[in-house]
Picture 1 (spheres, rainbow, N blue to C red):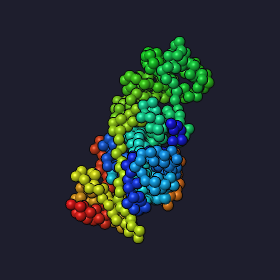
Picture 2 (cartoon, rainbow, N blue to C red):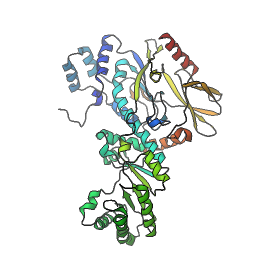
Picture 3 (cartoon, one colour):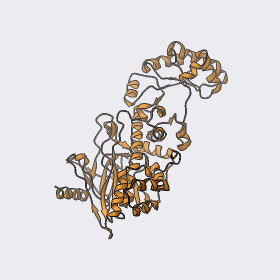
Length: 482
């Protein structure tokens, strides 16, 4: 049986990607150039926007895309694939083009966050893994960003590894949470692999291991005097935990002139307990001692704690972040948008459904974001056909596609193309930013959204308009397919 380590992820695809590829080759369409859009339809948790994440893993996947001897042997054993097709797969390498929005970019429903131009077999084989990577990390980055915004400048740490749906979800979830704004993680491997700052102090088992709570606190302060955060709720938070922490700080840290320390609570009425603990610490002279709280937190509980006057400096958020428990599916899809003939002519394609949300935007497209010159705030996104350009020196009227009677005239704006080239002719052309750079970029781009778009409840509807040319093409296709 193949070991998990070094697993070839090329075979992490839905089986129908392979059967369609075989069929394309048999039908003479294997090398036909196709255009696919990867996009999502609904923002999780009813929010105003999502955060794109996972592109780094897509790049790694495509650079290692190959079918090994074991893969070919498995496929041959299924007895349904032609030898011509198996030979094609044995010599497979990606030769197409990919564009994507940078990781950390706020994105909106039905706009492409990744575009593939490639021969049909190649483009089809990419679908499953790209959706897996982008759906998962975009979901976690979006949830993390909501939680970080709810904390109103207080530190948020990702604590969810033990509740994640498998090791990849824990490791890459911590990466995505960092992009979304978390300051660090409890997952050591995410730090080792990606540089997500890992940290931690003690569990209740540490306290229980010693004869007394005070002995446990003394030992920890002696071992880690410059990073002593003590878990004070193993027995009784206010009667023993906080008093024993203060005593250990006085005995071990104060003689060394150390004032930086902390306590952590993982249970109980956090608003009440932290107010009381803060008063006890301040009266004992430990005004710089920080208070960290965990215990099944999310953005709404954090908002409530802050509104109740909880004295919390850092939030450790676990299961409700790493699993996006309130809405654990991002819902990204991968749809054919156009095909290209040998002469280079591009024919738009559309998917039609009785469910209006499932009607796709056809053609090979560009995606612009417009920012106000005076405010720096994002005003609208704009989808147009690949051969169109936007002149941001002239006024532009845009419409809300979900309410075509609503229009807005944009003046004094700058236009930025969001889709950046990642691969050209199968070669990586994208400069991979460092993770800290992605995190900083994400914070800047979220800050460019109006507060009304950032609301958790009933956020302002952000305009994502189609150019007149693209709207006409879409409308003509809809009429043609009636």
